[in-house]
Length: 461
Ligand SMILES: [Zn+2]
Image 1 (tube, helix red, strand yellow):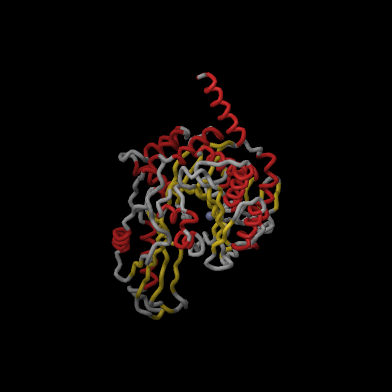
Image 2: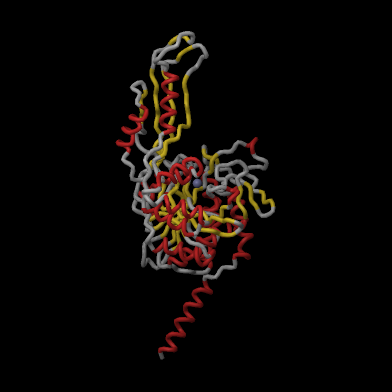
């Protein structure tokens, strides 16, 4: 009897696996057709025109009986939501991708940025990385769940959102404020991570669990206007230049968090000895300062995740070569650690600049809400770890993004939100060429992301 029960259980488990086995090779042409169709829709933001993309997605999903709803603050900029019902035992999981893309400088591209041509297994188009892979992943996951009649123990919601590239009013802010019940979830999966390859094979999976908070600041210099022939101690150009140099050269205090500590520990465990020593030393208060100096020179990404960073990006002062201007300003791209006390930070910045003729003006409100990092002891994070092991035999590292994503708004609502991504190779750099000219992705990399997300959802249950 026990033997029989055991056999039945085994058979049930095996058939559950078979039922969810996907022939990815067979599915590839369909995935590529949907992906290139999306890439050919010019959703450059501004103006966005995301409704065109939302309608294309609606056609694909509704033709197989998956109902879609469009939500738009501006009729040209619709968000799409679709849902596959689970048993309802657990709270939903949300998969999101943004349909808008950043603009292009066409003259710098060697191919049509909206042609989506495939050259030797590599697809070139704006949005090929950022973020249409997640959009097509969401589409395919819903289609597969529906076709295979798989019911998970939670709903799977897909949000194809507008306005991620700097205009979240139309996208995530609007959905969170006005249509929260449509996308309310325990977990969210969006952009922001990657499957990192080295020497031609996967090395580790990066899952972003938190991100820095953009806090653009202005430095405004004031001084007397004057004749360019008469040197003037109060010259606003000189004062502004000195203030920018001091702010830009300021080595802000470094600080580890749970995310960055775990990240460096796990990175040390899989790095060659010299690198591993460095990643361990950054965790050792006695040795950290030396490594931090090294990061400052040679690993800006690592330098940035250890601190609130200050990067001057714009200087605007003067209008004639023979006139001392009375006013001008500079912009600092400040990226704060999630737990930074900004009032104290601005006070410290003023002390560093130490010049009463320079006004330091913090942003009225930050571009994105600030929230604690998503946890690394959740069922979803464990599912990422298990699938990373099973598919690629590599560990999973939690990561703090230096850039900003719509996950910030979801974390602020209490969602455990994670960033995933396709394969990146060393020559593609850590961001895989997102926002660059000739943006591209290999078919292999796209397929890996979709399969990885699919397996993770099944692993989650
Ligand atoms: Zn993006």
